[in-house]
Image (cartoon, rainbow, N blue to C red; front, side, top):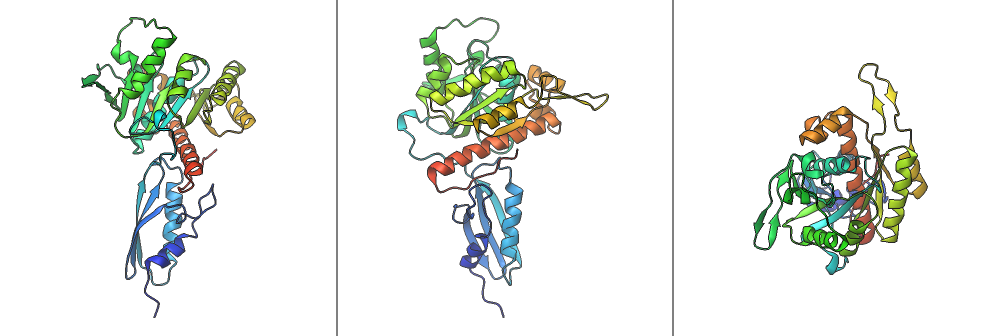
Length: 362
């Protein structure tokens, strides 16, 4: 007759499941909660650090196998959950109430699809269950409202602005406050003030991620954002050719000087697959983004194929991850979102030294 199964036995078995990056077990990393056992039936919560975990199913399968290996175990019920951690010890003056992580999406130049990446990144994270907002800081060319299909004038509640929600993402942009073709003519101090108001006077609520679509270049807005808040990191967008890579190198060096970590590099418009012949065409060259990531020792977050559907979706206000979720482009954006979330989790774990880490697929 086998011994009665206890909670300690379950936790001991789960210690065999190791995190793929930190090489520590999931029990020591605080991922296992609310363990219950009754005879040969066990249950527990498996708490990940992001709903966008790229190894969710792998970890669940390993945990189930480990528990079922206990003699006498009949059934195990695992509830997969997620709690996005906030880095402890951040300066209070740089914190934005309710926002766990702020991510800057930048490129160093225009025309590489930075806003397209930011929008599809934000919507992908929201589709995976995260609470997400997007802040368009490109005052002179605010494209985020068009790409999300938004034209609602934000409402005010007291001294707070209530951001409209598009495709599950809370959205703020000067394009919502100044619709139409009227140009915004502001100098540096006004830009600094606008960024501060967007961060502090918008009722963002509880957000796991605030994605910030940065303007092209390495100017006032980038400096203001880095001075005002503690950023989880930057996502740099490039196309494969040298003209784009040159500017992204400048953006990388700028963020380094501002002590903003790089979460990695995305190569947009990476290649085109002909619908008639299925042949792959590398219109803007090959491998530039991945080579740049290797040069700087940062993750290569993914390559996005060039597609008419991505452009059409942006013009219509229906991001490709919504309008064509099974397309190669949408799948690539979702992989990028998972990898960004994973890198944020890794940074939080290293800072907090108490949470699980998630693997980045290359």
